[in-house]
Each structure stands twice: as C-alpha cells, then as structure tokens.
Length: 434
Image (cartoon, rainbow, N blue to C red):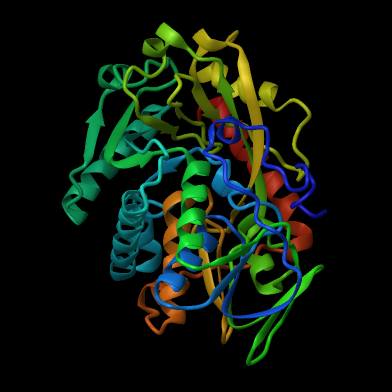
C-alpha cells in the first residue's frame, strides 16, 4: 500500500482546520526532464524544507522534490506542540545511553526548540506561536513521576521553565476530571503547523531552492553522483537527503526496517465561545501521560483541537470524528455533545525506542526520520544537522546518529502486526488506569 495516496486525494491537502486557515501558497510545478544540483532533497516537510533552506543559505544549489504538496504530511497535520529535549525523558536516556550522551541529546533538543523559534522570527512566519505546554497525569503514580522529573531537570540540567502543578493548580489550567495534576513547561510552545511548513517553503524558495511538487521519487541510484528518479524526470546530485518520514516506502531498506509509519487523528470542534473557560482557561497546549497520548490545545479562533485515538491499519477509519470523540469525552465529558467541524488523520513514523533515526545510508546520502510524535522541533533541527554534515560539520548529526536504533522484529512484513499487539495491550492499560 502506498501511503502517499492511501488516504488522501492526490495533490491536495487534507480537509483539516489547518488547511482551511493556512496562508495559501501557489502550487509548484512537477519535475520534467533531467536536471542537476549540488543536493537533492526528497520530501517537503519540516526536515526537507529545513535542510534545503540551510543548504541554500550556505550557497549550495538545491532541488527539493515532494510527491504531493509541501507540508502535506505530518508537518502540516500534527498537534502543533514544540517541546524541548527528546521524545524520551532524560533520566531514561541517562540509564540507556549514559550521562554524557544524554546531556548532548538534551542540549540538541533545546537547540531544536530555539531553532524553530528563531526561524519563525527570522522569516516572519505567521503561525500563531504561543508559549506553554502542560503534561498531565491520569494516575497518582504518573503524577509522582512527573513531579520527580521536573525536579530532575531543574537539578541536573538547570532547566527552570517548568512549574509543578498539584490537582488544584492544574484545574486552573485544564479543568478535566481525568487529571490528578501535572507540570507546565513555559519554555515549550504551540503553533499552527501547516503555516510553519509553508513559511519554511517560502523562505527556502527565496533562498534559491528549486521546489517541485507532484514529483514522487520511485528510484534512487547510489554512486559518486546520486541519481534521483521520478516519473517525469531525474535529478543528478552530489548528495541526497531523504526526508520522507512515514512516507519512505521502499526507497531505502535500511531505513524502512527501523522506521514504521502509523496513523493518528485530530478533530477541531466548533468555536467554544464562553465554554473555553471550562476547557482551557489558560491558552497552553496539553499532552497527557497515557501511552496512547491525548494532546490538545485551543486554535486562534477559539476551537478545541484534540488529538487522540489509535489505529492499527494504514487506512484511516471511516468516522474519524467518532474515533477521537471517545477519548475527548473522557478528558472533557462536558464536551460530549459538542459539534465537530473538522476531523482528519495523518501518518507519522516511529522507531522501536521512540527516538529519531538519523543515518548516513550511503557515503553521500543522509536520512532522518522516526520522530515518534516529537517532530516539530526535532525534524526541523534534523534538517539543519544534515545540511551542516553535508557542508563538513557533522558533530550534531553524529551525536544523533549514534543513538542505537534496532530494526523492528521480522522486518517490514511483521512490524505492523507486532505493533498491533503492543498497542492493544497498552491501550487496555490506559483504560484500566494501570
């Protein structure tokens, strides 16, 4: 199944609130004929756009190919949360990778957060950037862990942007009966993800990047020069950047064995008006402690954007709104009958350890993917790190690529059924409150 076209109309953004409110961008023509470049970037999400932008700003001749539209994939559909660090908590990284490696990963995660904020400011990207992400606990043990973790970040890393919230304090932030308390990270932020992607595309185009949409790559020939083939043409380049994430397909077997696409779903309610104070009296984003994470925030026009619900097949469910309404009604029973104006799905990618997979898959081909739900900052930063590595400074890229990333058991054929078993178990644990 080709996930580029399995759930979406060819050449069109999904019917999401993001697409309905984005600052539109003129469609780029597809690639026709044979061209040459210093670097060919495959994929027009945060990773590819960031890599292309940074390479072009450094004087490289860059071509970017996207099978659909720039920002079409997870970069234009996600929850819009910009967190620091990595997807895995620092105390876990210290135990599995060692204190020194964990420290470097923390610093790179903070660099990623600063990079996104800096790009928004530098290129005047109107994506409604706002501070604050709360992590909430649905059980007493989760609450204890979150409070301990906040202390760990303060004492070990000097991170003082987190406010510890008991039950009453959290209720003033997010009055949900499902949550016992949590932490509020005011160094994190939330934003309109598609407008961020489109803003990066405009900046890349201005910097000289040649962008081609509707140009699906069907073959990559390795060698001293990389030849990237589409149905309509080919690009011969000194380097290639693979920035496909959940849409990699069979372009590279090494990546496909370690990075698996999964689906997630988001709804946008009707504008809430005065009911906002009963949902999110403070305009911050929220993610909870469940394994199948619920995440939500307010839109700039007063809707609740709520993400949740798991899917074990690659086809989106027929009724996405119903799938997301179920967990939303647990978090906010007062909204069980609220109208849902938009409902959409998206394909992201995960790894076994929920840490990104950065690799030099050939001497002159770099790849980054598998952000596991932490991609707004990490993907944008991965693009910059690959650009720097191509230009001779591979320090940050080497730190990220040193993360051990095991292939999924059974390879691509078995990864989906095994994930189904695991997700079913963890979903049951969530429902039982274990």
